[in-house]
Image (cartoon, rainbow, N blue to C red; front, side, top):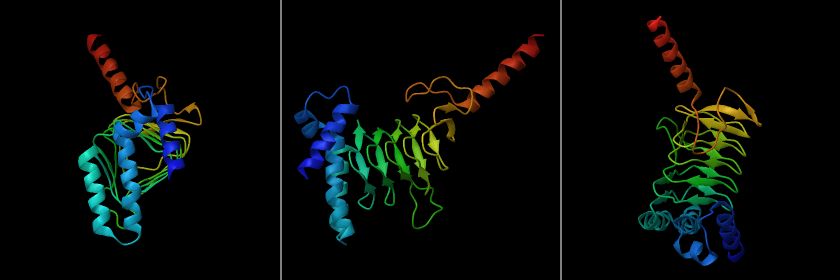
Length: 207
């Protein structure tokens, strides 16, 4: 348990430039508290103690603003930056070394039964406000841009942008004409196309 906590703290140090010390991360970061509470809740859930599991998860939700269903499966070294407003559903699965920003939802669409929530691969970054909805996979090393809505599978090593999200880069190769993508500054290829059409219409009207 101690070695796992140490790994988690080191992951926060590596990914959060605002982190100053191990003590600050351990005592004050809501992501740490939410994940540690989830480990306990998940153990109770898998051993049939559903009420206790839910009590632990709801208590953590009130303290951190992060709601993780005790049935969700979370890998090692998950970093939750800020964390407020995150919702992770019952059948969601998250791999190792992932980074999730605030306002993210790993949810269902209401149409599926059994496996209803997404599976997130290893080393995936999910930008703030992104919604990933449905029982599909987001591949390893992928990036989901801020405020994107992902409704279909994302291949490994991809960057997805927009509403609904589309893959704009895969294995380092741009799929559409977009500016260099990061979690803050992204271009939706559909929005860019609409803007180009609008400019063309204005040009024709002027002529």
